[in-house]
Structures are given as C-alpha cells and as structure tokens.
Image 1 (cartoon, rainbow, N blue to C red):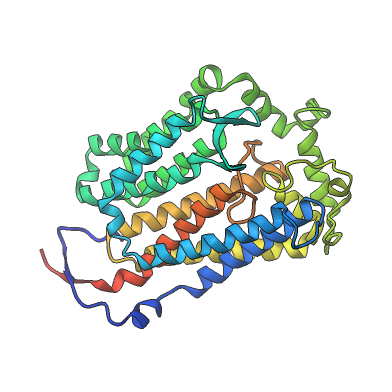
Image 2: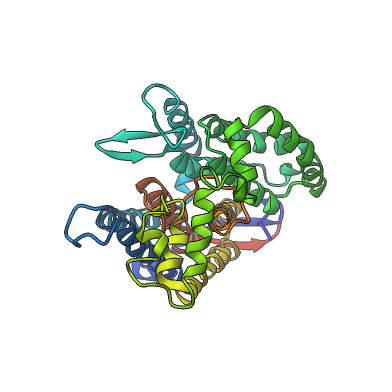
Length: 387
C-alpha cells in the first residue's frame, strides 16, 4: 500500500556508506536489461545484412549508444530520485516544449508522422523523452495530494497532466505513443488514492469516446491501418503486406530459427522496418521459438523487478514512479509484440531496449536508472507509526 502522510511520519537517517547504498543495486534488473539490449544489437546487426563488425552500421551504432546509455543510467541511479520531484514541472514543460516544437517546420516527417528532429543525421524523438518528464510530474502531483486524490478535481487534474502531451503526440500523428501515455496514467491511477468509482466511470465512457475518436479524431489512414491489422488479406499488397510477412517470418522460425541471417522474409528483403517496428518478427526468424521464449522470460523478469521496486519503495512518489515505469514497459512491449503477431493494430511503436533508435533506448535506460535510484536511496527514509 502507498504510504500515507496522515498515518506515517518520515524521518531522515544516515544512508550508510556508498558501498552500502550500491549493495541495494538490483542486479537482476540490470542483467535482464543487458540481455534485451544485447539481443537487440544482434538482431539489428542481422537486419542490416551482417556487415563487418567494425563498420559504421546500425548494429554497431546501437551497441555504442547502448554503452553510453548505460553510463547515463548509472548516473541517474546515483542521483537521489527525490531530487527529480523538485524538477518535475521543469522537466514536464521541457517535454511539452519539445513536443510542440517538433510540430513546426523544424520537425522531420518519417512514415507519415512529424515526430522527429534530425540532429547530425541522428533522429531524436521527443515523445520518448517527454514520457519521462510526464511521469515524474504525474507522480509528483499524486504524491503531493495524497489522500486528496479522492477528490474528483484532483483526478481530473491528473488526467490533464497526461492529456496535454498525449494530445500533442496524437497530432503528430503517433497513435502508438499516445496509447502508451494513457497506459502510464492508468497504471499510476490504479495505485493512487483515487476513488474506484472514477475509474469505473472512465471505463464506461471509453466506448463512446472510442466511437468519437474513430469518426472525428483518427486520420483515414489510421482507421485503414487498424482494420487491416486484423484482416491483412483485405489489402495484401499494400497496408496488409508487412503484417503478412511478419506472420510468415514468425512461423517460419520454427524451434531454433534460421540463424544470424534471419528467415527468408528478411533475406529476400520482404520484411521491412525489421530493425525497429518489426524487429520481433525478424528476430523470430533468427532465433526461433526457443530464442524468443528466452527474450520473453527476460522481459517478465524485468517486469517482476519493476514491481518489486514499487513494493520496496518507502514513499508515494517512488511507488508511483515504479508503477508508471512498469506500465510503460509492459504496454509498449505488449503493443509491439502484439502488432507483430496480429493481435494489436500496427502503430509503429518500438520494442523496449531491443528496437533501433537512440530516443527509445536512452529514455528506457533513464527510466531504469530511476528504478535503481529508488532502491539505492530508499534507506534514507524510515517510517514510524503515528499521526
């Protein structure tokens, strides 16, 4: 349960030596993260045709970016996560600014969406980093309100905090990222002290809201993409083509896969975007059922350790951060894998830690650093019963 400000009083005590604090570092969280990153580097290297290891290719770039990102994660872990609470609104406004700026002529259009900045040949996606700022702001707001989250006004404000960046992302348009923002908000609301009736009313209002969005918000190509996602045979040579190839690639992987070169769909260049959106399908052709089961086990262990951080956190802010990160990782992974196997619409979302892209990789490494920070610095707070 979340710690309440009415029934517990926080007191600060020495946190021990540096070695004591780093003794709380979650090695399982770290190792499973490394497994996913390493899995992604090999899959990306394969997806671009197995070029020489020392050449400039997406696989080697992902490895370098991953190494830099791990250093960033360790720096974030060393910082007391409570400091982020004082920076919450600055980080939130910076994220909003980036999302607004990318919609100007400074933004770069890719795959029908204007959601990137091109900096020195590297594509930066502000929606990935804005997720971090939005989560910190949402967690800070919920922690500051405590029991007052039972008031409907605070429930609405919490929704508004996420609705602003989510709306900007939807305008790009990027439906997949928008859905991740919503999933993050739902995850935090499930552990906040809001009234269950509010969530029930929200669920009841989801159907008319979905109808309105389908008819008046989604672009025609988004509606077509949604329909074809479940019936690719309706447009097998265009919108449904990649979905069909992804399914063939996954099925053809068999038990052990076809090796580093990938399956026939990859070798014949029939499966595109196989370094990011459809990396799960490409990797399935490489490693087969056994290899992909190993990846899924690593993801499940990562999620378990995320929930463990939430359980061991000593304050509401840390618990909301941990639960929000869990929601982001789970939903984004579920959405990417789901669209590869045909149970979710194709939305162009990355597979956490695995897909190519500096923005996705670094944002998740920052989130992993926050999780480690919660563990490393939680001993600074002890609680005693009382009012």
